[in-house]
Image 1: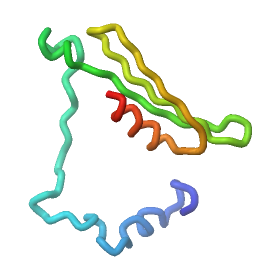
Image 2: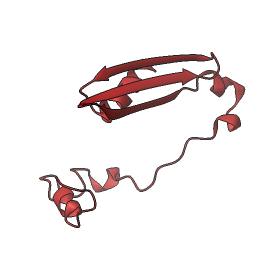
Image 3: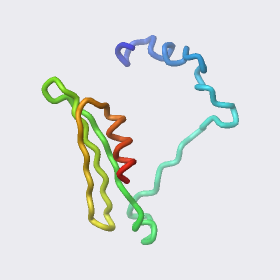
Image 4: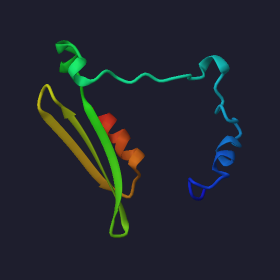
Amino acid sequence: MGEPSHPGILKVITDWPEGKHFGMLPEEELTHAEESPLYYKLSENEKQYALFMDGFCCIVGKQRRWKAAVWSPAQQVAETADGAGESSQTAEVKAIQMA
């Protein structure tokens, strides 16, 4: 697809068969997203179920390596997984699966 800074990148994305709305009906279109509340503003009950997740990918030598992590502040427990040859999106999904 080329460099993200390429002026034609938006045209490439919006010329998909589904169009620039990716097949969504107008009433399904997302107009805004809400941020989650800050951890310290959660109730004690909500803090019991709060999890923090992240996944990333980097190049080590000539191979892509990924790592995913989940942390529970209430239980003071962390879990990680790692692998090779996949993308950062794979790592993010793995973190969600672990959660």
